[in-house]
Image (cartoon, rainbow, N blue to C red; front, top):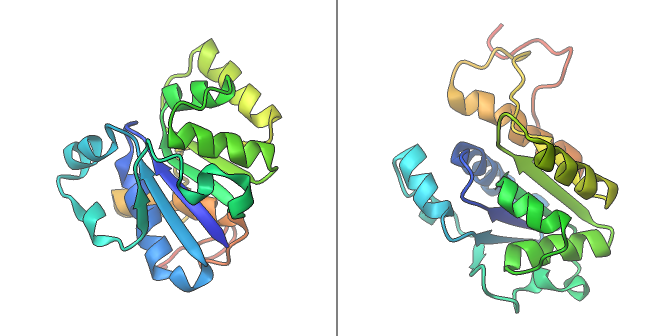
Length: 189
């Protein structure tokens, strides 16, 4: 599977961090992983996580202005784009078909090619514009994945709670990454 991951400046860098850690742990399941950062994404990461460990991941990284990145074209055969976290501004531009950055162009490509577009949105509460944009992207074939952790597995840390959301990403991609499923005995029980 070939996937791209976009990180926007929305709050919720912990989700991107957990996603990257799982991608790296299971890199054998992916033929290619490309990463693109919005202008503010690294700044928010540093503010929220108090580190720059995004430098530790050995994925190919592209500028948000790089329209020659492979996932900017349907002919490159990427299977999915995960936007994690996805700001409401990014979601709005996707909903309106505004391809003004690599992130929004890649989202447009996923929709037009009928490939997976997963938008891990991180905002609360929603206003009517947010809801309508979520509806539009869903009707176009995208998947809206709110950053709403589950607690069935009794997560003990913020990282474990965030992982319940990023595990859903892999489930939606159809990638067999081991994770807690409803009805299982919670870890450590």
